[in-house]
Length: 111
Image (tube, helix red, strand yellow):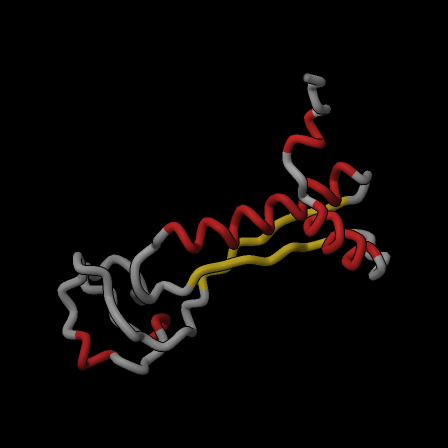
């Protein structure tokens, strides 16, 4: 049995395909943006998006490019739910952007 090189152990051909498409833009700095809406709970699915963005950035860096990631929390997203720990009445805020929801603790400008 022959041992495989580390890069052959796990194929990331699709990441390389995406990276090649991105490199066609010929930018000085590549910014990979990912994010989360404050609605609902944080779950394992959001980690997939964050990991993919990070892997693309790492591949760009490996190829000698300047690359950065930016994590965005979209607080203009309309309220659809609150975490269980929030005591605000959901019906009062449904459809209102999170940035316009009051801070129930009174320490900040908004939720």
